[in-house]
Image (cartoon, rainbow, N blue to C red):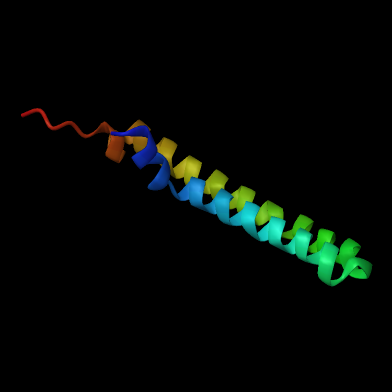
Length: 80
């Protein structure tokens, strides 16, 4: 499997990308739109971050279980 194709197909990659973009937009938006509320915006970002971390952790645990069971998609071969 092409490493780039594997990255694009990765749920973990997209979750972390979405998290980074949302956090960046919220923070930069706070700088320009509501500088007085920047502390609250930062607190909301800090509250949301663990959710993404735990979802990525859960997906990783799922992938490890599939690898140990021998049913992970990366373990399939085209040989007959």
